[in-house]
Structures are given as C-alpha cells and as structure tokens.
Amino acid sequence: MYQKGRAWIELNLENLAHNVKQFQSLLPAQCMLMPAIKANAYGHGAVIIGQALEEMGITDFCVASVSEAVELRNAGITGRILVLGYTSPRQFAELVRYRLTQTVIDLAYARQLHDFGAMLEVHVGIDTGMHRLGERSDRLDRILKIWEFKNLNITGVFSHLCVSDGVVDTERDYTLQQIASFHAVVDALHRNGIFGFKTHMQGSYGVLNYPGLQFDYARIGIALYGAYSLPRHQTVVTPCLKPVLSLKSRVECVKPLHTGESIGYGLTFTASDEMQIAAVSIGYADGIPRELSNKGRVLVNGCHAPMIGRICMDQLLIDVTGFPRISAGDEVVLIGSSREREIFASDVADCADTISNEILSRLGSRLERVLEVPLPCA
Image (cartoon, rainbow, N blue to C red; front, top):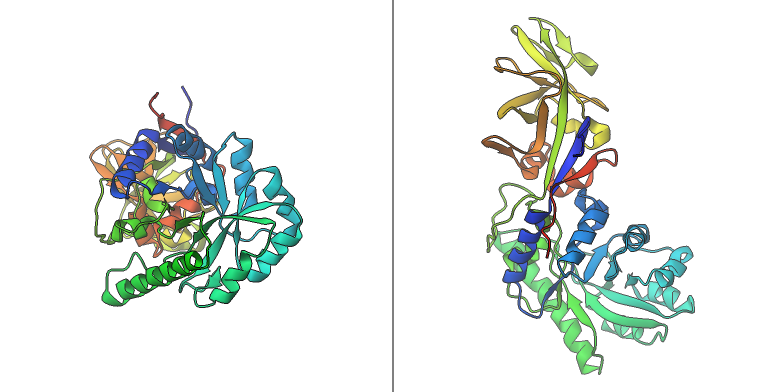
C-alpha cells in the first residue's frame, strides 16, 4: 500500500472511464474522441491518463508541444498525437522520429515544414475568429497553397471555438458564425478536389453546447476530467460527469492563536478571539494560488476550515476553532470529498477568480499522483 506523504493527488480511473462513455454517447457515431492531455493532462498526470485512455480504446490525442508528445511516446503511447502549438524548426526531426502530427500554423510555417525535406504528417489550422493560430478562413487562396507542399501529408483540418461556453445570444451567434466559416473552408477544399482529411473543432463546451455537430474528432479537455471551468456554467446537455482528481494534504501541527495575535507573512490575519489554528503541508509551490489567502477553504474530518493568512510556498494555515478532534497527520482535502461534504475544482477556481483549467494545470510536479481507483480490467 502506498504511504501518502505531505501532499498528493488521487486519481479515480473508473470515473475517467465513466466520463469517456458519457461523451461517446453524446457524439455522433462517426465522431471519435481526441482527448486533450496537454499541461500534464490538466495536472492529472499525462502518462497515467494517456495510458488509461489507450487501454479504453482511445487512439488519438492532442498536446501543446513536442516535449509533451515525446513524454507520451517514451511511456509507450502508440496512437496519433497531434501537437497543437508551435514547434521550432530545430525540433522538426523529433516530429519524424516520434511519429507526431504537427499543426500548420499558417502558410509561412507550412513552407518551413516542407523545406525540412522529410515527409511530415500535419493538420492545418484554420482561424475562424479566435485570431490566435491558423490561416484566416477568409484567405482561401493561402489555405489552398498549403496543399501544394509535397512534403506535407495533410490528414486533418481544424479550428477552435472561443466562446462556446457562453450562453448569451452574442456568444452563441459568434460560435455559429465560426462553425459556418469552418464549414465554408471545408466545402471549398472539396470543390477544389481536396479530400481525405479529418475535421475537428469542438472542445469540451463545444460538445456540451453544440452536441449535434458533424465532425470527425472532438478535442475534449477539462470536462473529460469531470470538471467544469466554473460552477455557474450552464450547458445545453448535462451529462453525469465525475471528478477524476482529488487533492489532499496533511495537518502538520495544531496550536492556539490568542486574541490580538497575527499570523503568516505580512501578518494579514489577526485573531479577534481565542482560536485554534493548524498548519497544512501544501503551498503555492504545489500549485495552490496565493489568491486564496484569507479566502479559500479546505475540508478536515468532514468539516469546512477557512484558510487564514497568506499562503506560503510550502504551507498554509487554517482555522480549526471548535473542531471536535484534530491532530497532526490528519488528512486535509483541498479538492475532493470528506465524509458528506465536497469541494470541486470549479469552487476553488471561483474563489480564486479564475477557471478550473488553470487551477488543475498548475498543480505541481512534487505532488505524487496516486491511483485511488485503478482502471478496471477489460
């Protein structure tokens, strides 16, 4: 049995398998999942998650960088891995060596890839309104030129929705405009005799708010891990998603804080009455945002405990006044459940004025990833 230390992440792979089935049931039969396991699988652990997904029959993945893709290949992941971001020409050889699929960012980048001199598998990015990466959808002449490069094996065309999580009319109208622009590019490619490529556009909220779209892949990210970006997000379809990750730590010590005494860096919290406080062995170096100082809360023995004082690099302090029993070594839950209560990643994000994507992807490397519930045997 693994002896859990100062702070750790527990992963429930049964919940991951459940979420995969939920999304597969939402998508058209021909649409396959292309899970986003970038940023260390949103903090969950890219190798653990990638291996588990491959055991579930997933054959396509997307990441942000070559280094992320190489880590997966070295761990035995054999499926297609699409690099969504920029790869330096100095790393083009790794695209070949590790059998990776590279995003064509624009026409100039397509020329760089072609001039490398080796056949490269690529997906062409189309900018339909996010104005980040991809050739603009209204520049069909430039898009068509990409197919003239003989060293590019183009197996996919994709875009990215930027307000698909929105529910107001302006956001929905913009998303529908993006979808129409992408379809117009695909139709134009077909009219020019170009076929044989896969299409993808939806991320998590693209599926949850526009589930009927007919594409070949869905790049599910945050929702695959059973999390919503914010707790107040409403979606057109509401699958039963289960959190994959729990974040836990330990009480280091318990001590009194007397009336008028202040604590922590900057002395930002002062006791107005007699209190009992506890130090917890986790801090901002583990990914806990300092924005939670004097605002966040944790669970100890099924009870909510407020964070007090400034969060430190390796510790934080909590108010445990009136707790019936608490001692050094007790488990502290920052994300997850304790008895009848639960804190979601989106709750933490809301308190820190950000989104759960950031909270989870910031979780540090010194947090060990532990399998709470392994993937069931096939």
